[in-house]
Image 1 (tube, rainbow, N blue to C red):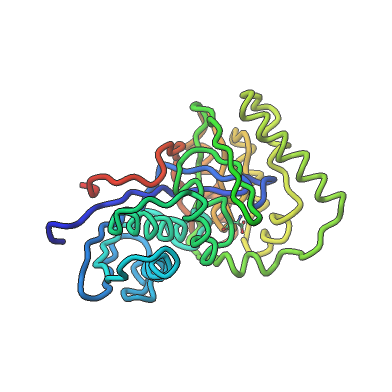
Image 2 (image 1 turned 180 degrees about the horizontal axis):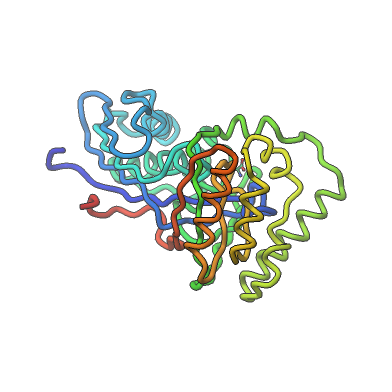
Amino acid sequence: MGQNYATLRVPASTSNLGSGFDTLGLALSLYNYFTAEPSDRWSFEIEGEGKDLPKDDENLFARVYIRACEVFGGKPFPLKVKMINHIPTARGLGSSATAIVSALKFWELFQSKELSVEEKLRVAFEFEPHPDNLLPALLGGFLICAVDEGVYYQRLDFPEDIKIVVCIPDFELSTKKAREVLRKEISLKDAIYNLQRASLLIGSLCKRNYGLLKEAVKDRLHQPYRKELIPGFNDVLESAYSSGALAVFLSGAGPTVASFCLEEEDKVGKAMVSAFERHGVRARYLSLSVDKEGAVFTKPPA
Ligand code: HSE
């Protein structure tokens, strides 16, 4: 990289949190780093996860940047981008949201203009029409998101003592495929079931009433259908609960499974890995906390 580069750090995220489908998102202390500078053609150097991603203007970052130039104006000069990716791709941890958010932040930097959250999301939705990874990647923290023509969100404190243990299986699952198995119509009974639990979940986290979390993350809108795509899902859930997890759910569209834990992080992580292995799936776990900063310009990682 030459003299004119800048590095942006963008967090991973876990979304849905069980009952809060397409609504709740939590930024995590696992990051992708994007360094970019103006160039005469689009190019990408990728370290870590996602080495097979496109290295030209087909890369998601480039497509979003070019679209931002069309929508908001500005010179669509190409960029030379270096990505150091710690977030595994297509695992339900918001890696594509980091590329989308990053492209918009670099548009602001190189065009010397600031976009509102709503403006950023308007372009972002053309590439990923769900706010629950995008808003945590952009803003950090615990977010309740709602969208129609507008974007409405509330950022809440997340309990400091809860760790998020993510168990990442060794296979990818595209969000497209994980949405194709969902039902287009749902019963009033199931809608009420999720509404009750998502509300309970937010209240329980705000009031630190952890005894309710296991019930509060239960879901009837997406996990019952998606679990068919994830060998051993029920066993992973049960193993995490019997090792002391407070709450266990599919991370985003999956296949990663996330647990909220107080002190049993390693025990829960190892139990989830073993459960996946019993079903012939290799997996690893990470114990993470909540990222509160979102996308920030920083130094590249050492
Ligand atoms: N809420 C989304 C889903 C997250 O579960 O499909 C993935 O963008």
